[in-house]
Length: 442
View 1 (cartoon, rainbow, N blue to C red):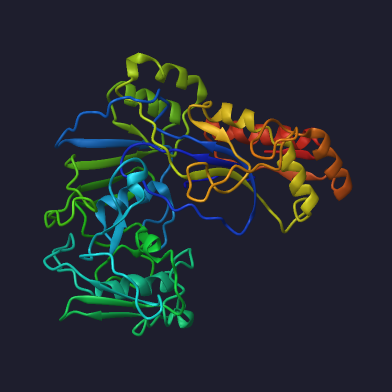
View 2 (tube, helix red, strand yellow; view 1 turned 30 degrees about the horizontal axis):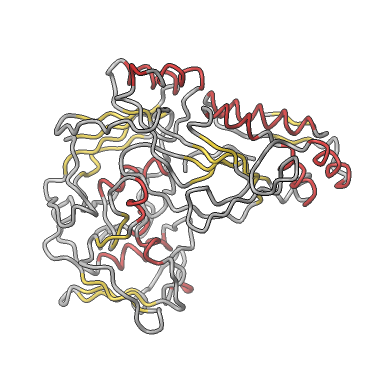
């Protein structure tokens, strides 16, 4: 997800175009606050999908850009929503709404292979006749470059560290010749792991593993996105103004489940407007979409909920959390009791209201969102006797823990984004911290 405020948690929903995320627990202390729905805005359930329109320009408005555009490094929902239109991996998430979008389907590979060698070896058969947007023919060896760049750029994750040879890779160089074995004659790619990894197919479906040409620089490409194989290609990207995607003249559909042809001829994402102004431009017909990650101010949501805009407003569930991360290396949150205290004190009802209300968000006390596999209701940080759902803050318990931790009176700085909703989140967190004995500011 893009631009998370520093210190709370929210499980979220995002709209519309093919959006897929992998929810992971970061190695930080987190205060789970809200399982949320984030969309172009809110809507009542059951609205019919908009009619399909071919051609033209689809314009997205975003408060800010997504940073460096290199797919080996970028880890934002904002760019990923564009990369899934321009690039492909061996496998991918089905381009479908709802639970159907969790299905792993073959993409540049002809099928999803079963593992051999005790779960440590996967052999992929690569499709013939696919070209990158620069006209270069896709070959299995292109994937060697793709995975080696994860370590030389480097990427922000350890998703592919289980590949044989990865432990010796660094920004100075990487040789995965034993871990990612390409046979350009047989059109096969073999991935050898040091140990079985049941999440490998999910990881291979992420943009980090999207194929780039073998000649791509092993170093960061900055704002220049390497060629891909999808229905669109990057024409330009300026983080101060806009990103522009146009049709890839070499694209053809090989598996519509993995990569359909797309509808608009051009996709433009513009940056710099306040979210409230983004909404007004869409309502006035000057743009098509408010970027999913831009939280719409609550004072506009009531307008958008009216029948007048039923055809324009859509909410789709996203398996994700919003949260405030706690700095566990500095007081007061290097203390377990202090971390527990703010979890008890956080007014999750207030955060849900700021986010847009119960049609867009629900309170949560854990990393797993309600619609995530293996989820079980669990909320230890609440008032009352329930431990399965959040009923309200327990300020008495929170204050007691602050005293026991000997952290009362300490200063805490709450970081946030500078949009209206981000500022409101931070102000609420400051209020929650001050209510239990800290001296907090934004």
